[in-house]
Image 1 (cartoon, one colour):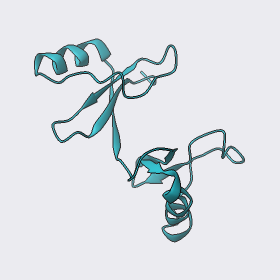
Image 2 (spheres, one colour):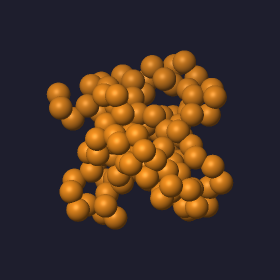
Image 3 (cartoon, one colour):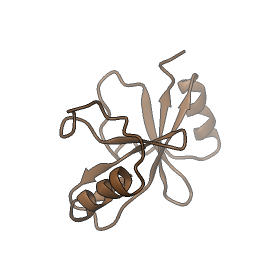
Image 4 (cartoon, helix red, strand yellow):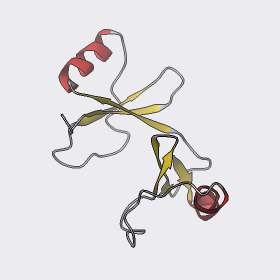
Length: 112
């Protein structure tokens, strides 16, 4: 979840204190890493993003065949959106957008 700066601390407290979700961020790593929580078996990331006016939901789709996924998405008219946010060098992934403008990171499963 991309959260505006002016709402970030309250949003973080909501998931951390009000809902008391299990935090997955390494102990003492706040400031170095985006806080992450166990959200019903899914990972909820809370990114503080200056310059946005409201929160945005971004999703991740994991595949063990990144090139095949890219070809299939292109074949079905899904445009890549790699300008959305730079990815770390060597990280095998790309950005797309759904018809409803929800951003998705399509990434390669590194566990396989």
